[in-house]
Length: 510
Image (cartoon, rainbow, N blue to C red; front, side, top):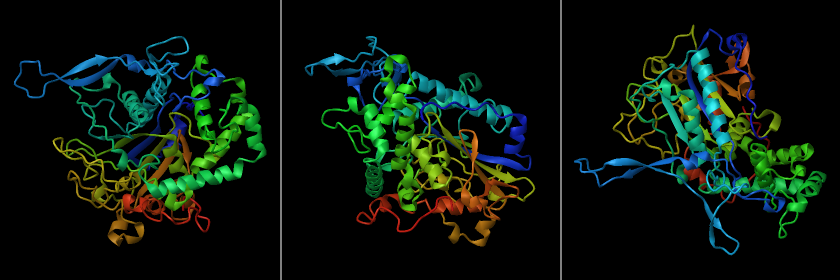
């Protein structure tokens, strides 16, 4: 529910089973939740919880690029680096400005709301180190040292903790001593808020906002008057605000907000702890169960998940000869749970802990003829030339589609254009030649290093013989097609008055 306890590295026997010699690893995409953070809002100060936490050392050693016009140089834009530290200002007792202080009177290293903490930086760095051990030390899939990051796809949402977690994970994957002395800064893709689809963008997608409100209200109607909620009121009710004295799914704070604060405190030190009743095991289980239903029950619905498009196609800046082999996307708990639930693989209904990750791996069967357009040494997805500006605003490019977008396409991508190939083309519309290009390829998902299975892949003919965790690329694509919008922005404006809930059951993962 809060901090992930990663399993030990795979043994050699486990590696042989997970990565059988008959399959060649071709492409890996990692979706990672950010690391531990401070709460997104200050809550329960009446319970003794400090509003400001001293766990963000990064703000004491910041650097920023500044244009220096004092230099006597022929360069029109001479940039230097300004080193600075950030202190947080807040309201005082009578609205006068005061410097925010931590529980011990700290003035520095104070976290902003929802900020990645030192603990979160450690766990996301360690995630990168674990990925390095697997994909470099054990599998030899990635090179141990790099001169540039052109073969990597790096993407983060506009939320700072996601970007910072991505940078920490990249540093764990390739620490400074594994990069060449002239290693250029890696390109990291972000999007404007109106184009962001790597998390539930209810601020910019009206239909998604309506759907999410409807599912949240359904959870409130189901749970607010239950014995479970009565139990939570006995635990937390004494600290609820006077204007909203009852604990409720749609209370103030919302039940999910209470969970947010509890999880944040559990991940950090004793100076930022709530009273012991907040950590009652039965209460925590109830909160998690209701929170999962409120936030993720709708993600198995095709329209709901289409509005939450999770776009992150592997197009980035670099040299035209470099294929993308490995992707890192810094995202959120809502991203991971939505992906798993939409594929029918959200087993256990547990909230994704901090620094959770999904690995989406694509393989090619070694004894099967490989399509020229998909050869790892041929025109796989290439990246625009360094002088070209990459596009980050095309909401049609989802990571689902990007996983296969390069099949049958040209070997280069023009700036501002979507990736070539058949990734976004529905399986039902593929020609016989296009379908043949999918033959011999398989997709497998691992969530926090445990294999997860997509139900539709268990059907005969939809998986590698003897192991239904390896879904044929054609079957996987046909399942994913149901969640890939044809025009995300147009669909966000459609069906605004339509019912929120499907008229018949729609099992996920088929």
